[in-house]
Length: 234
Image (cartoon, rainbow, N blue to C red; front, side):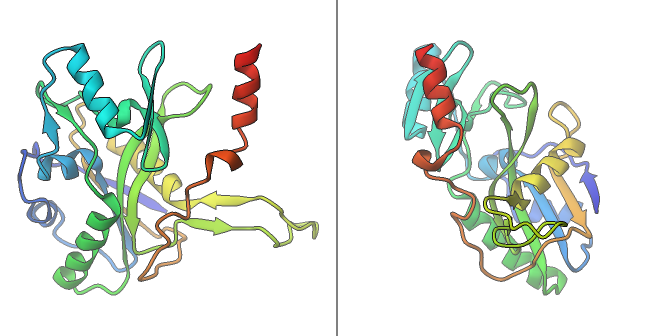
């Protein structure tokens, strides 16, 4: 698998996202996956606000979340079925503004995919809109796919045998987030100025339709919930 970051100029708020993409990517191969950071998607939608003070920012975080809880460093929130810090609101490289998450990353992924298929004459191409996230008890950020299109987001091993013939009962591989992480690693989090990346030769199943909620687990089924519930009691 090859992951190639694309260095660009600075993306401007309300700029046309598709025009920006094709200006910096002159060609793309069949069965490639285009990765787009959520920040420029949100900027293209004008998803920015100015918070005058800490209280105003808290109000915005609560409005953007389905659940919000204040912690030592950030607000811990639920948004679009995902646990994230401060509803995904970003202050880095924002020129004094707060950048919210895109309105609908799955819809945008599908729209961009359809336009790129026509523009480059492709049959199979994938799109991922990424963000960064932290994991419990682990330092640093990795990637997450806020939305994607054109390929299956999960590989299910359940019911299949391992190398010794024992059947898997729970194992599934999160393809979308794994690809997002590989892309974010080379795109960078600072001043690298690489909001786009192209992944080639990825071992994925390209398809026309995806199951939008295939990566989401109900909170009652999440394996970590009992641990943290018990830990808080102690």
